[in-house]
Length: 447
Image 1 (tube, one colour):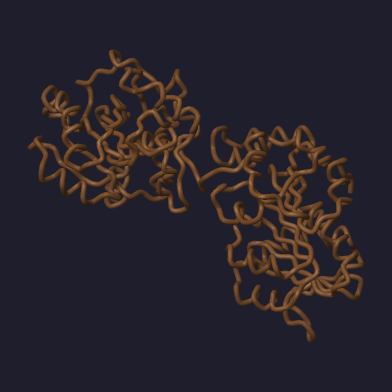
Image 2: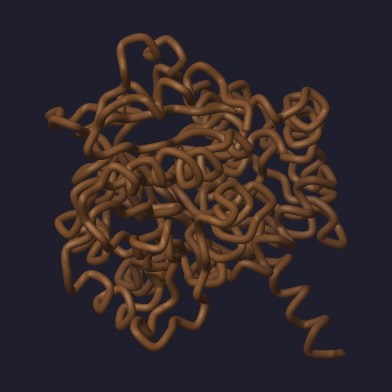
């Protein structure tokens, strides 16, 4: 196996805890599990060790049986007992006839509890960022040496604040780090906690052609691109609108928007908590106005306002002051006010006190992954237009452009980072899903 200088330094470096973070295809698993971990097992005076991944099958596929896996690299020195044997009924590797390496998944609590019932010499954890924090905490105190590989993830996860951000890189490799990642390694340093950042460039077996193919196949602007290609931590489990706000595609001057060609005009309200409207990092209440072109072919964002009030009555009054022009001039088109469904009291209060007799007030649709995919496809087909009028502030534009995508939880719901940029995107999201989701669901029902 050919190794870069950084990987050679990693193997030689003495540490009680090595953390490997970085891009995809950087060799973290191959060198981490296949070389450094096994060398630590050789040096250890203990008999029992462990390798774990998301589940047993993943451990077998990616670490044990892969092309550059343990069996390939260590040949006759290593035998895998996938079903255990008479002496040990758990899957395990026998190394050099005298050391046992348990192989298990951290998805199986009964099994990992059994493995961690005694002290281990060395423990390798694959994709530690997705492991349950209870497992991480128990495993951390049950071994002398631990090695984790991880894909960049939500920096607010407990595993970062409790473990990873206490680690530090070697001085000679600090220049390899993105500044964003260095700033996140900000907890009190702990002795023996070493952080390693590996990229495509550290993997000698990664050819320029392979690197170009991987980068080319990953959509720019998505969380996947940030995590896998840039090797940076993200804040969600998914995303929509990866190419959001390309000026030549998605922006129009207000005078170029023919309001009479709209099927309907809706208002959306995302409720926040900040009175400091000049602070981008705090949540704000954002009122947006938009509509659909005839046949619901396009969604058009017409105006956006920050509402500084926090009292329900005052929020409603300020919103309706902004909306009255639309209600008067487009009486037949202005038909709905869509409110953040997380605040049912606001919805009920507004219904009781509205001055707009013909406008319905409802909660935003709770959407699923399939619906988000629908919206993403519509946006990609240039079906989302935002007008450039000053009511859509420069700050809002910058928020969208730096944000690059609307971030989503595992279930497809909006991830609320409690920041103004999310409040802007939430309002647009409410508008987009309101009719397109209804259309797709009615089509499914007819079928």
